[in-house]
Amino acid sequence: MDRHPRRTLIFSILKLIIGAVIAIALVKFAFFPTQEKIITPNAQGDFTLPTTTVEKGSISHELSLPATVVRNETSPVKSTVAGQVVKLMATNGATVNAGAPIIQVKQTQESADGETPPKVTWVNVAAPAAGTLSLDVIVGQDVAIGDAIGQVSPDSFHAQVQVTPDQLYSLQSLPNEAELAIKDGPAPFACVNLKTVTAAPAAPKDGGDTQANAGGPQLRCDIPADQRVFDGISAKLRIPGGNADNVLVIPVTAVEGRYREGRVYLPAQGKKKPEPVTVELGISDGQMIEVKAGLDEGQEILEFVPRSDDEPEPQGS
Image (spheres, rainbow, N blue to C red):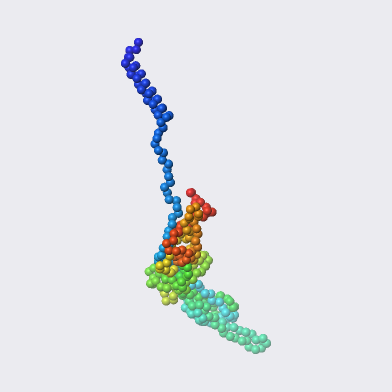
């Protein structure tokens, strides 16, 4: 006999309620699915290539490069005659001018018949350049034509600068002179006869600047004789690259090429690829570049040169 009829009734009622709730839920899931709208995400980014506009402006260019003051190359002194040294006409350490006599050589020419007294002449050997003389010959020594008898270290100097190809191209044309500034030295002055040379690598001087001995393309200019400078000191060489006012300019990032001629790209229309346009270029300041022909003011072009199809994908992308 059940001793707790009331408790049994309550449990029965709870079972019925739970069963009803489960049944209602199953019916809803089966016949009345959720009506919430599923939102499909749409791409919101702008995948068009950025563009820029051709504008008018002013532009100027100047290269300021680290330079080194270098003494001009030593000139070897060679005997121009054969004979015996009879006189030293200049001493070691003397300052000589180009063409100044430095030694005298006695030439003796025997007669063909053996009876006529030999012909004796005295010939001076001259310094090949101006500078400080260093002799390597003594009186009474016999010399032949071409023998090295000393050298002349010039008292003249030049400034030299190591340059890269892009720096050379950025100048468009090389001026005749540049401004040389030496820290704690004389006021900036004109360094003349600016030219491009190709230097072979050389061992650095003791305590010297290795930049002065690097190989490859270099710019050199002559330091005027009235300027007091020292071999191996550092300086700054400022090279004017020109300026232009009220000209068409675009960012250098938009141009393929930097010297005289390049290519820019017009924005693609529809499914077409960007259209390349050849342009004539002028000076650049490193950020902007002058366009002499090929584009019009206000014309829209790509701000960056597009990557070609055959260009490899960046690593790690």
